Image 1: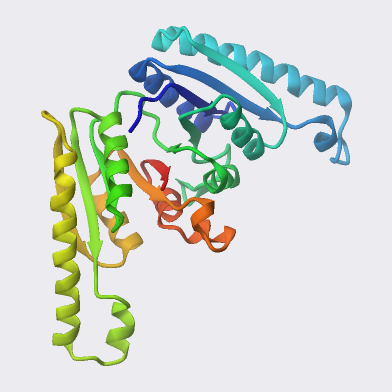
Image 2: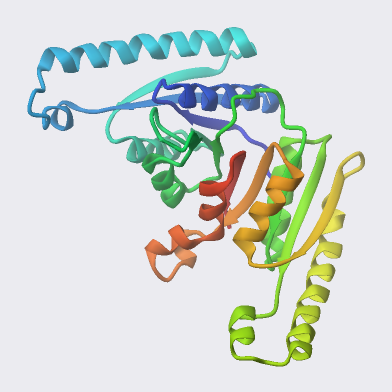
Length: 297
């Protein structure tokens, strides 16, 4: 990874938003860079669409946001000793404000909470619409924060695909975030269209040959990537047979990393803009219960 110079962190002032701000503060101190804290609030046109909307209510919400932003900046300066931190309040929809601000401040990293104030399913936080929109449109890596810990990351997991250049980039991001702890490289493999082969009642031996061929490729890929580690850094490889999303999520559950790093196709490499929803990076970020860094590849 290149050095992080500017971090953009978004908050709605909910507990999930504060967790994202805390993580952004920790990373800003770690990289000794600049931090911009963004809050998006409705403009009067949006707010007044409500049947009972009154301008005094709108003014109260706007004033409260300004006070909360001052409190958040004071806390960041005290908790992390930050000197290069500033706040921005934009009167716009959250996802659009985050994307535009990331470009305006030339952010190297965007930090957001995974959820809004009330997004729980059976007690488990799920990903909110704003986070999903940011993942679909952000031009830079996005860190989706789910945990409330703000200490430096000690263990990471990198989802390795067949594009070794992209995998190398992901590894460098992981090692940059956690220079001393273990970095797990998870590479899945299986026979091409394995389930269809089984449904077609192909001979088990033939399917086994196809699986073994893919395993050898995976072994070679991981061996090639091992040189990414620098002295004192630990890379551990995990070759696992199975469908990518389900298999990776299983490895996240068993290895329990503090941070997962996964790539995601950029808009330019998609045939259809809606493909981002089916992308492995989006699915991992949506279902994982730990922090996930999604890096455009």
